[in-house]
Length: 178
Image (cartoon, rainbow, N blue to C red; front, side, top):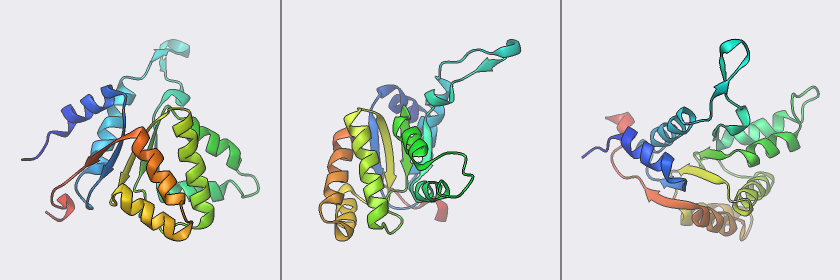
């Protein structure tokens, strides 16, 4: 039977845990993750702002990043006149109180992208920062795919993710094809 996403997402948001959601395409990994993020945003510390309005510190909010776009964002920092440097972007992503990395493993990594991703995961691991990852691949398949490009890099990334996150396998039919 289908699971009601909102109550599950609220429980997960309140757990304080990181998660690695894996499963076939269309099983609801990203929707569940978006519901968790929404619950976290709704619980964010809102304070009175200028002119009687309300404000939320941007730095206190979860950050949702589609993994292939992360590398495009980094490359955009190399352009003359970019709003932030590569270091500033990676610091912002690395320091997010909750970071969602959506669709890990859907693109074909380069040595450069794996080194960046490895450093990002390692930082979040060392700083015990809550991380939520979605993937169509199991952690073992992520490790194998990344190891094929840079030996042992995938194993290191998968090991840190498994240490930081509760692994949840999301099963079911592709809801987009129903």
